[in-house]
Image (cartoon, rainbow, N blue to C red; front, top):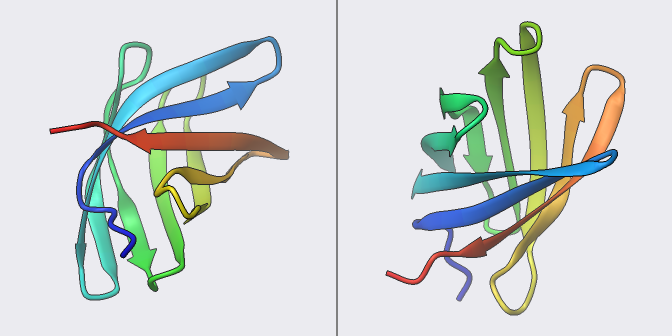
Length: 102
């Protein structure tokens, strides 16, 4: 069974670099809540999160380098690793995540 309720090593592949963070997710029915925590952007709350058993979607807001709302879409593979993309303004960047062993 795929599980999302945990902390994840998370990566956004930007041109020329990879931004890393820890994403903590909690599902309640179809609702998804949690936080994203990175050295560069600090802690961001997950907003409008949803999990339908197949696809995760959520938004977060950053203020650096400017105010932006980021829109994430991901699925889990058979090994419970997350893959998907984030929409940032006009760009679409690849994301990935692996559960952090507790």
